[in-house]
Structures are given as structure tokens and as C-alpha cells.
Length: 157
Length: 157
DNA sequence: TTTTCATTTCGGAATCATTCCAGTTTGGTA
DNA sequence: TACCAAACTGGAATGATTCCGAAATGAAAA
Image 1 (cartoon, chains in turn yellow, blue, red, orange):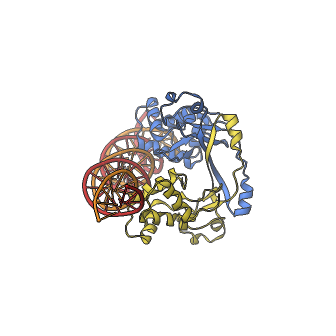
Image 2 (image 1 turned 120 degrees about the vertical axis):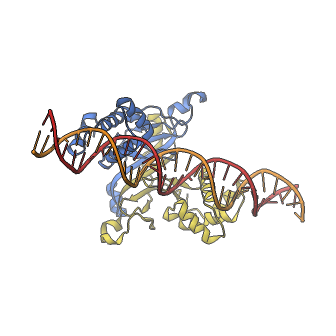
Image 3 (image 1 turned 60 degrees about the vertical axis):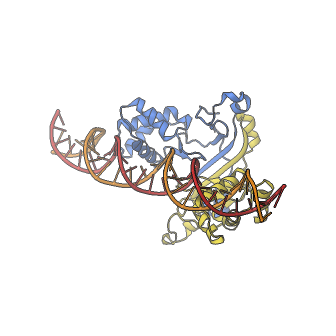
């Protein structure tokens, strides 16, 4: 599964009977363009607003819910307050920096075999979430003053 | 790291300068006795109340926060509303059933080498969270009527 | 044992992400 | 172009978690 494009996402929505509205277009655009930031609902709203006149927070949540339900995006939940979302559906691990809060996608397939889990625990695995917490490169090499607490930065390892 | 006991937990609190109060004892007891249920703050409070006169929800949160900060318990965050906690600090994977919401501990060390991640992504791993979602044995073998939606059940595979 | 005080507890209010709702707007088909 | 189910909106409701000032209390010291 390769990096999803704006057109693919919109296409899927269309073919599944969703109406294509300016709000949905804006939100999809934000997800495609800023997905690597693992943005939260508020950031998504702000960015969407730059792309079309009006987008309410309710709509953002509704749309994220639909996309998530359609398996087109995934939501992450963290210790912190706000949920955050990701468009990257390739198998990867989220590396969450405990200092700056940056989330880095680390592209390696998780090597625990779902098949084994199924057999041994009688559990059918359909979905996984793997997160490693620790300190990212910036936070271990930059001077302390350089990272201003839990903020969204960019990135993809 | 073996299954933690009531005495170990209390001992650690004591040696780290925490006062031993009836509330903390009750909460620790609940965690030790009902930890396998991966209980949430409310359940912990209810159970704690059975063990000592008064325990406020504020106290439960405060205590869970302290234990968590001391690395004695871990909090899990899920799609749902309430956070849930676990005392099991052995390396394991949480198998989360999408039907009944049961969380099963699956004892297998995660096999992605933190060392490799550190080297390749410049990320120092200190902690991990691994969850597989899917359907548990009960939910694939019992008649549908048998599982009354997202509830806490028992268990440990 | 009593005193003392920093720590803990309490409960009610505040916060904040998310959801709900009722009324209005609108994409897309006929 | 008209129509209507689906979407959108903003404000109110929800619910977990945090905050806070005041009262209670472990446990060290006297």
C-alpha cells in the first residue's frame, strides 16, 4: 500500500456514495499535504479553513470519523489531550518523542506474526498499533533550548 | 520482571517517600487483584470503595498518576472514552477484542529490536506500546447473544 | 504519647476534546 | 430546474480528567 493521493481518497469517497463537498475536499487535502505531521482535529480545521471558506469543527470530526470508518485514515491516541490522525496506512511503527512530542513514522513491518497470535491465543488479528516511546534524534543532539516542548514538528524517518 | 505483588508496590511507594494511606492501600489492592481486567478509573474507584470508607475520584486519579510516573503501572489509551490501566509490566502485547472490548495479555516479547530502531532512526527507545486489534476466542466461538457489547471481562492468555 | 506540618484527601468547579442536535444548506440526480 | 437525502453549522451537552482551596492525617520529631 503506497502513499495515498488526494485523488484516490476522493475517488474512494465518491464510489462509496459520499457527496463531494468543499469541506471534505479541504479536509482530504490537509490530510494528504500535512498527514506527516499527524495532525489533530484542531490543526486540521485551521488548515482546512485556509482552503475553503467555512469548516466547522463538527464537520471535521464527522469527516475524520467517516474516513476512519472507511479505513482510509487511522486515529492515534496518546497520553495527551488531543487525538491525532494519520493517513499513512503502510505498515509502520510510530516513534513518539517524549520530549518534543514529534511522531516519526518508522517503516518496518512489525515482525510479530499475526498468524501465530491467532493460533496460540485464539485471537484473530485485523489491525495493529505499535508505538515506541523515547527520544528522537533532535532531542538527543540539539541543545535543550531548541525544542519548545510538546509541539508538532514534521517528519518521516 | 514477574507479576508484581501488593507488598512490592507498597514497599516501592514507601521507599520513595510516599505516605501509606488507606486510599493508596485500597487502590494498590484493586490494581493487584483486578489488574488483569485492565480497569478504568471509575471501576478502580468503585472497587477501592469496597475496601475502605472513602475514596474520591480525584484521589484515584492522583494515585494512578503517581504510580504511573513511578513506572509501577502503565496507562493504556483506546478509541473509547475512558483510559484504562495495567499493572503487568512484563513485556507483552495487548490483544484488544473489537467486539466485547476485552483486553487479553499475550506474553511474547516484541521482536522488533529497539537497538536497530535507535541506530537507523536515531531514536532512543525507552518504552513501547504494542496492541493488536481483532476478535477474541469468545467472540469467534460463542453465539452472538453471549457477549453483551463492550464490557470488561477477564483474562490473560 | 503528643505535637507538628508537609502531604494527602475531598468534592466541587473548571477544562477540554468530542459528540449531539435542530435547523439550514447543498450536491447531485431526475 | 426542482427536489431531497445527505451534509453543514454553531451552540449546547457529555464525560473523562485536572485543578483548587480547605480540611484531614501519616509519620517524624519532641
